[in-house]
Length: 623
Image 1 (cartoon, one colour):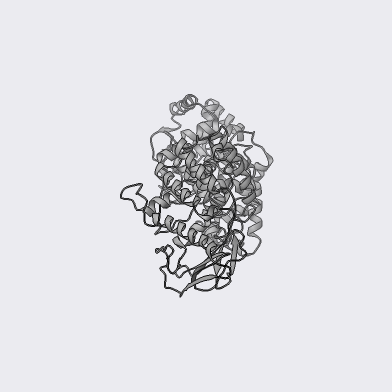
Image 2 (cartoon, helix red, strand yellow; image 1 turned 60 degrees about the horizontal axis):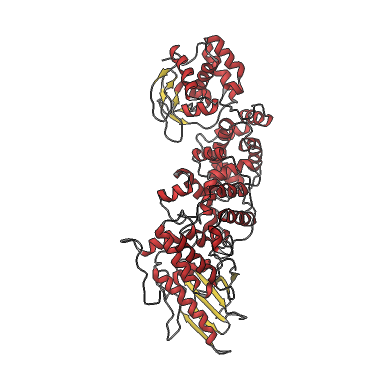
């Protein structure tokens, strides 16, 4: 394209900016107002920089605009051939791409990229290859200026640009040094500048990549490479897949943010991909592009060779460890269960909280302090260091949901479950610290229900008894605390003998008596039962009139205790009213709806024992 041409539309009736944003988003910040002309303007800035070579030593051009005379966001000027007055197009956001085209190249070659978006990325890379921004002989720096001034200046050493954004109350700074240049001219000194990196993406590499994609199509997807990246970094598998695909859809606000083709290629469900997206939010555009800046092979053709994507995964794992810090990976089934909890904290971060409580996940909403600069190497950010009320709310809600879940709904030996006692110890330590973070945490604790339940539970016996049971390893490896055969076998035997039931039927009866959500799927998972075995146990209970058959919303089962039923709104579980006080759930005054439920008042062996004591003493559920 030249200055007077506009690229043909890829999609009819859709603004160019939307198409470009969808294609580049997540790796390039594309504000409103971008169009195909922005590509031309970037090329124009490159020509302006290169034009400094034609200036004589000592010759200098400087053009300054007073504050507020340039349209802040939408206008985008190409060089004026007479006056050489230029500005940074696209509000200067494209400068983040310098030295970081690897992620765009990976996205262009990924089979998970929509065809129309792939074409946009290819056009961008073609354009970029023709500018000095892809030439490692040039040196670039970005930063900020203190004053509200916009300018451009150049001499035979290079060029510099200032762009004041009144609405954002900041002034961007950008400079380019020609090969051999010593210092770019500028009317004032920047207050903060950082060097742009030099990584993969020479003009030859970019043109070769574009040529290969157009000749051969996208590379073959490699699910094993995704698993390897997940295990090496601690990323969830869906997050690892998104990274390895160049983070498609990262810039959109709409859910589901991937189309059917993209989800099929990646191999994960909507909810899993949504959680993975939140897991990667803390990277930001710059973090994502920095992560993938140098993971492409020197010869792009290697991507199409056997193991090509696996080699990219290996380089990505190394970059992740250097930039973000590797963490232990939770078991796949555990991560899936964490997604189902629906906490505001992404499932992977919740798992990391339990896997490594004192050095775990990045807090929700984390952003690099200087978005224009390169991502610094940093260890994992600690989510316990909350600095705002909303962070404390996210953390406290996640901790308490995680404690109940890890104890009862994960099998013994699961590393997330094993971390539960340390989570409690560390959380208590932080609450007792008396600093600002502790203050936010205490406020969030008091926000729940009657304001004391969480604090009382954490400080008193139930928490100690439950954590002590987990720490002692009393449950056989692979078994669930929700299975009374594993945690209270004597109670199961007594039920079976007293009621004349088989062990399976006695087990199922105890689960229906006590557990908040004994859905058919859950019972089979906890008990390792086949549908046929489950059906046989259920038939015994029905024949003895110990239960009633019915269908009730959000229950996932057909067997219920006799007596009143309490409905519930998500995420609370509906349940029989009889069991609510036994397990610490509170009902509304009408007693037909669950009001609150989060924390068990005792260990499950003790609660199974108490439930059976009530039934045996004639205080069981009745119609």
